[in-house]
Image 1 (cartoon, helix red, strand yellow):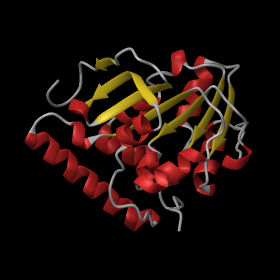
Image 2 (cartoon, rainbow, N blue to C red):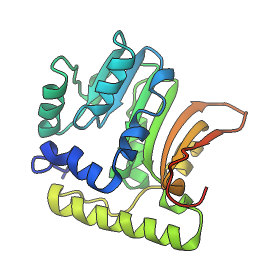
Image 3 (cartoon, helix red, strand yellow):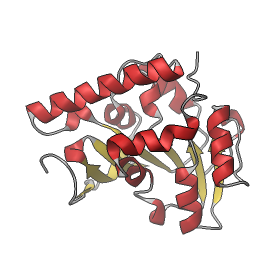
Image 4 (tube, rainbow, N blue to C red):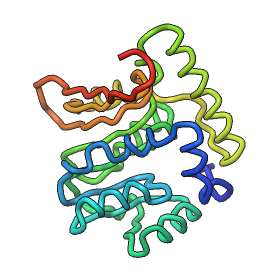
Length: 214
């Protein structure tokens, strides 16, 4: 059963800001200025990534996959002319944007999902990485917050996933290389820019207002 955001769609941004202020939106929009023309956003949610992208690139060719009807309605209220498609109908593109999407899957499901993506050259990921937080106590606190979040979404949306997949390991096993990374909250939140078959090291940016060790 796929999760339903009918009860949360209108209040999603408010709930998010209550816990994280604007940190998640900073993850979503971290690389917007550098994105190429043809963009596919999967799991767009309430339209805040699309709004930021089209503000920066009014001529961007943006397709959106958003399975939840309530989220699509809120996104259209934000931007009336958004183009929604089914994943199987999505066109080849330059970049696939996966903001807080892979955390809906376990590891096997994430691989099957990635197998369905259209041809693309870049993957943008914004997500939680509690296992990469520095320090035993901060890592424990990050893991506890993830546990609470999954239980909250299980109650409000019916989400069946109970833990984060190993996003970095999954993408690296598929020959992707993270070449740029923006880090917040001591490594708990990360925005990542992935390309295939790249040998130079990742460029990391730690935001100066991050919480936790840098």
